[in-house]
Length: 292
Image (cartoon, rainbow, N blue to C red; front, side):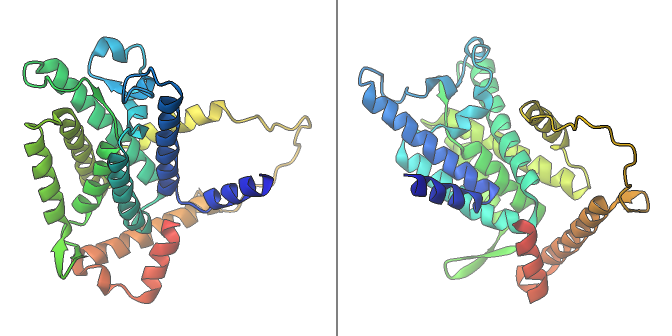
């Protein structure tokens, strides 16, 4: 058993940040399945009800965390499978071009944007949106990542079976299907998809201008994470502290990070102008390592 645990831990440490999110989604799915199996009296698709996002604001006040946790809840295996496949393939492309922090910002803000649009639709237009009173699934978060990539480099072409297609065509087709779906049986889910897509588009537009709209969210998460870290203060006072070497007022870490991001931006500009295939071997390897 110890060896098995060590193997699992070792494999998890080699996953990228979006693959870890996939693993969490799969684990939550099986936890819900086991709870449902053990408690046969529970209604179908309700074993994880405390993590679902309700359409009623009064119920949301009781479980405010559900504005994020709903994105980790799946009851149907096919729903889980398609969401995780999308997340895996988008994640491979995304993390070769952008940082893991950016990926997390877009993923969680996309989930929140999808949840908020779902709530707005059901509370402002109750006569229109009547079917379904809860939201589950990672679709809105995945949409945010997908639309971000498509909006950031819309003219980049990807291989689709036997022909090439521009990313913005893919984005337009998916959003069009979501808009049509609002008038179907899964109105709430499609509302959330549109919310996630809108966040991804807005994020990309601002990011191209040099504005990271997720920095505030990132700071909040970092602050919350700091609450759970143990203090490592030494009982001895430091009399003399060696200063780190700096470059033009920046630490060496900040300077290296800045240079790395500038090189990434230059390569992304090249991709936007001439496509991914125009990169040489060194540039492709640099993007791959940066994604890791």
